[in-house]
Length: 326
Ligand code: OXD
Image (cartoon, rainbow, N blue to C red):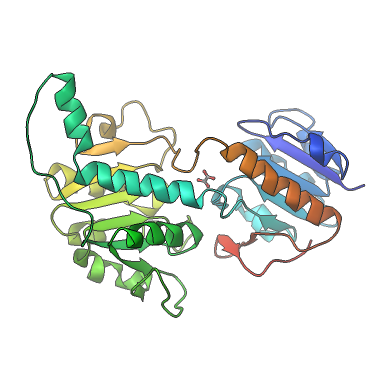
């Protein structure tokens, strides 16, 4: 039976169904036995986060033995440290599981800003009945930065409500629904001003780090809404804060941050035009069970040498299709 090491960094997955298929060892990331266990593992599952001990202990991962690493995260960036990138193992991630919930969260974020729900809640706290005019979603334009699996779902949800949706993609490809137009990252600063909403869903890689920079932020149209559910370092948070404070943006909702948890002294906490969201966009009730179901399917495939799902292109930092076996 293959040996699978499961390292729960946050929550602990239910591994009971896996025990019939593999010899499963569950070890906390700070367990002194971690390095030894890595050395005898054929497969490694990193659950709910990433821990520096894994990178430190990585020299023990036997390139002739360890064939597969899986992360419960949708975005694999935290596991793409140089030694794992160079290791021959196949890396898979939990692509697709959270897409619909993340899309709903992005929609809720934009609607909350357009309909000024935070303002209404603030007035309610002061028992103030104040009529205002709000903004419509239908008829607006959205640019989705990162038109992958999450971005496409976001695009579908917005398009269904009458929003014209375009996307930014690294590799040029023919435009298909829900996108009306797909542009490359180099065009972002030129086109950003054409949109009412900038919706960032991109994974973190060398190509996307800092992609939404000060030039892009400065190009946004007055009243634009910015939402980030991709990765914090994809956007220049300082440039966003400056634009928000200058009254140039309609609102900013950030679910992911350059530093998580957001430090207690971050100026964002007290920013009235911002929603500080603690990296939970996709975590609707039942999400852990859905991630476990994918894990069970992956282990079944690994053990039977079938093709694994959601294999990560280690160079570019996101999941690719087609599938491969390990
Ligand atoms: C992520 C996740 O990758 O929450 O951000 O899975």
